[in-house]
Amino acid sequence: MGKTLTNVLVRLNDWIQTLSAILLGIMTILVLTQIFFRYILGNPLGETQELSIYAMVWVIMLGSTIAVRNKTHIAVNYFAELLPGALPRLVEKLCYILTLMFFAILMYQGWALMTRAMLQRSPSTGIPVGYVVASIPFCAAISIFYILEQMLKKEKNGPAE
Image (tube, rainbow, N blue to C red; front, side, top):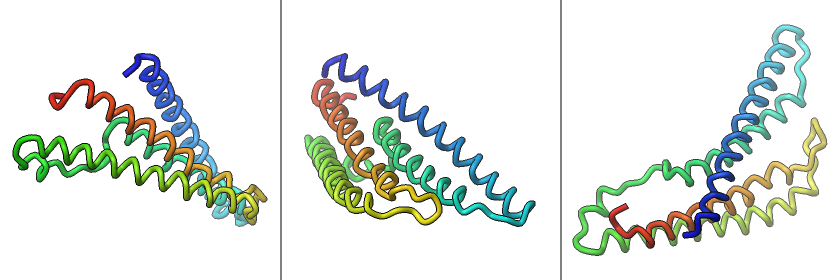
């Protein structure tokens, strides 16, 4: 696998981590503002709740790409490791292929949902809901690149990795 592609994916992951942290900070500020206005001033702001939910959606989706990149999603390797010979490697390849298929479907269906959701406006802020739903195909596409990178590394380094 080329060093250039690896460097691009490392920088992309760093950018996603930074963006996630910023969005988490914004979400925290919005929630605290909502608490202040609701319980101290007795006049809740609908916009802060809506925006914090939208930030949370993006944080979750971006966080899932970070987990894919770092291979920190839950995995059950116990049974695959009990298999004889080359079967564990075959199971691993099958899992990569199934994961790629999942993210491809998620990207395709997320794109279709996003284009439809662009016509719908959120009630408090008037933001097209498609901007929130855009996190689905965007993060699915990034996850596909990360899975492909892992597959290529595994093929290059062999089963010892």
